[in-house]
Amino acid sequence: MPRTAQASLIWNRDAETMPRQDLERLQLERLRATADLVFHKVPFYRQSFDAAGIRPEDIRSLGDLARLPLTTKKDLRDNYPFGLLTVPLDAIVRLHASSGTTGKPTVGPYTARDLATWGEVMARVYASAGVTSRDIVHNAYGYGLFTGGLGFHLGAEQVGAAVVPASGGLSKRQVMLMEDFGATVLTCTPSYSLVLAETALELGVDVRSRLRLRAGIFGAEPWTEAMRQEIEAKLHLEAFDTFGLTEMIGPGVASECPRHDGLHIAEDHFLPEVIDPDSGAPVPDGEVGELVFTTITREGQPLIRYRTRDRIRLTREPCACGRTLARMSKVLGRTDDMLIIRGVNVYPFNIESVVLAVEGLEPHYLILIDRPKDQLDEIEVWVEASVELWNSGEYWIRETEKKLHKSLADALGLSPRVKVAEPHSIQRSEGKARRIIDKRELGS
Ligand code: ADP
Ligand code: ZN
Image (tube, rainbow, N blue to C red; front, side, top):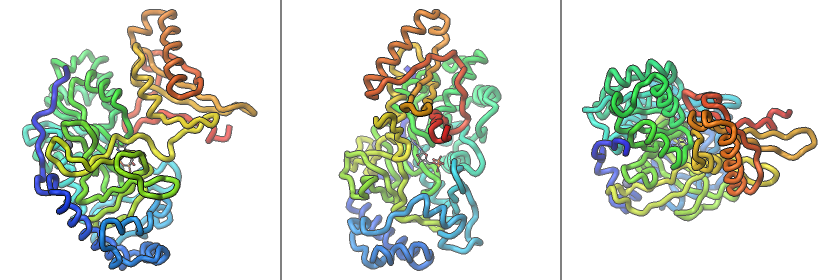
């Protein structure tokens, strides 16, 4: 059994356990103020409100939210870098940006009050994982423009923990520091946590006896329940999923409580909706759709109905932890990462679950898609063998390949090529993992 986190705490009891009726009243009030702010300060929003035929004063209930225009990544790009600000630049004290893989990045501008809000929501994330002033937080999210590093840093200071600003990379030194400083909490992407586990193994540092990690707060990329089990076993800690995006504030938007049954959304700051990504129609609680957020306390760059492109389920059922805040499921994929292979919809998420259920394989995998000239699309899945499997010889490797092939074919409804690869042959990531290589996009 891995170690478990210290008893979970509720950082802001008033906000996090507020009766839903009161919460909804607060949300409506803040929504109206935000709509009013952007309508009067941001030409883009004045135009899009006008086009939708709505004015801020028309918002009388939370149901009216659906009448407001949606905002997309393209709108942010079109208004790059400062077109959506509601304040003059001298009120901005921090600028982050998310690495758009294509084109211009998305800008995250913060006023002093926005930074305070960020500290508040991040403190909730830590408290929920039982982190207090007695903890040493080893923060291996990347520091820099990416919001992960500084966001987790801010929250750790807020709860009074000692934070080690390790950032990503130099993994051997990170393991040494975790051991020497006695880190009790690890924060990084789930994929990087596995790199650290592997590095510890290489260095002969036994995570059970020489590290003191109790909790890990992992996010910024999708990961499955199967991956959680791998990480908990390999690092000997309790793993919490945490979610955020630059457009809202960075990390701190939603995070797990010790029930690990969904991520509580900081709904008093970020108003969630779930819509059908094609029609835009609302999707009832419990059904999968695209997550849409409206910031209701942001000053620098408030966003109305921002389409995250993340596919989730939402529930407003009360949680046994006492929080009344709605919970989102783990991210089930993106509306834009669905692979269509020979007409079959394939989600990388499903592939991960299958891969990790096959014995002898490690949680390092790669999905390659190709379209050979004038032929059908081909999908190939490479997964690393465990050292034991690799050393047990060709026969067992081929048997495992057959098993992997069958499980993937059953789950996906198409027949992928599979390869059980040598240990350590698949490239590791210090931040968000890149597990899909789609050669079709390269036009080859
Ligand atoms: P950050 O990496 O700080 O969370 P970005 O703006 O770079 O912010 O990326 C945001 C996106 O990252 C989200 O829209 C989502 O797709 C993904 N993401 C963040 N946290 C998680 C998580 N816990 N699970 C799955 N995906 C996540
Ligand atoms: Zn809960």
